[in-house]
Image (cartoon, rainbow, N blue to C red):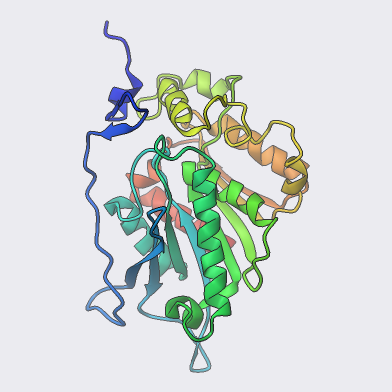
Length: 320
């Protein structure tokens, strides 16, 4: 019987210098560009460079049909999105992520800012959190610049209704970014809520769901451990607070100051017990939490099951 190789499962090769060779090219989608209308297109999108040096960028989405009140355009909530990919794969232009953001933008409706952050292990944590904070500070700057600010945000976005939304490792980014923003002056931007869809957290002590689903087809335990090895700072273990927010530390006082949270999870996800423990911790710290857990479903089910994807968008719509 051959030994299970997590790198083989992830379709990557670990190089001697600590970087990865990614063996699969994932298809990507182009943004539509800065057009007002496209035939049959519910959403338009465009790419914006955030920081050339850090090679970070964003993809902005807006609905082509804008809701109106008394003949004036109603301002839309701004959803800042952090993608999945286990820290090591994908970007905002990846077809399945691009299509999911088109759907989110059109259904909520909202202005969506898809943030592209650095991949691990070339970029170790907390680089991803810093990239995310840069994006939020950029959005704040657009609100303050009434002459040259980004038009889609300034004309159609409601800066007082901003939400952080992350999927899998992006859920981890959303949580840690929200904590970092507590130390920043971001007015007139206001974070109205944090949405964490199947957030990726870990820890040294195994949970029951991790043991029960250790050999999960899609997300087996050795793969989860490997992803943390690749993402965490050198010398850190899985009880580092970037991975395990349940550990004690001075940062726990900040958690009390977080706004409303929506946490989504599935019973067939090895991470489900951690996600439920995370919800309990938030509640214990006095955070308003809406928890949506389904007994059936696996990690990333919404990427392959359109019915689940639609249900999650409905949860978000209700929350926003």
